[in-house]
Image (cartoon, rainbow, N blue to C red; front, side):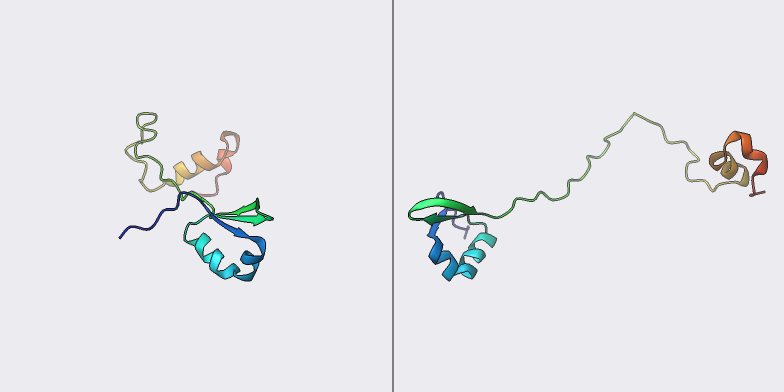
Length: 97
């Protein structure tokens, strides 16, 4: 059985919503929109937030933009650590030898 979808939001006067707030709050949690009336005129709307979930990045987003070297997951050698972490002018001071 599919859930009932209302075309018009529920309209409630201010006194009624204060008297039965839990009931109306539960309706909002279930997806209903509630319009609060004061002297028969709408003054507020209570509705569920529409918070988007996390979006997954599309597979292959950067396809063809760069090439992964064959040895990208090879262990570092002492020389490669010094070459990637120490500026050229200070490489003679490399502590990893």
